[in-house]
Length: 204
Image (tube, rainbow, N blue to C red; front, side, top):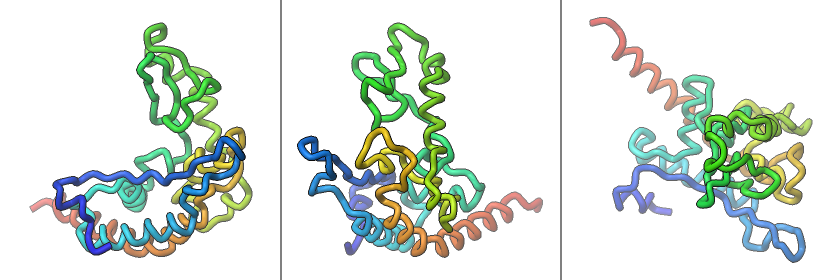
């Protein structure tokens, strides 16, 4: 990967969603699903190019969230946050769901043609879904990177079983590889940005 080709097209905002799919015939992961190691290597390589290009020149969603955490102690995306509470998906029919990875009858919140979206955002099922992210395995709780990922996205915890959210993320080892590789530079970037902000806010 010699360059971030998309930046040459004027694209400044990127999001990467790892392909993890279940084969409906076997119930096992599809052969084309990315492995944790592959995803970890991908994140490391993209991070190095992002760092070289200039972190403030290009927004990569996951990286922005980690950097925000290094600066403020708060994440900006649900993947790494404590709860899954930030979104509502509205389908063409008006049906609403708490996440675009869980658009299925079990998690249907209601329909905006029948119920105010504000009420759907605070309904019992939405709160129930949000709290499921707290169902963490013991391995997560003692992990050196727990504060950074909070167990990751629930869809990756339930890669083999859509009803199980208390397992470690399928991508766990990939994320560990990435955090081990990138955190020193994330902290460096955060320190620079905080120093720059302090200098700008200092009275003349």
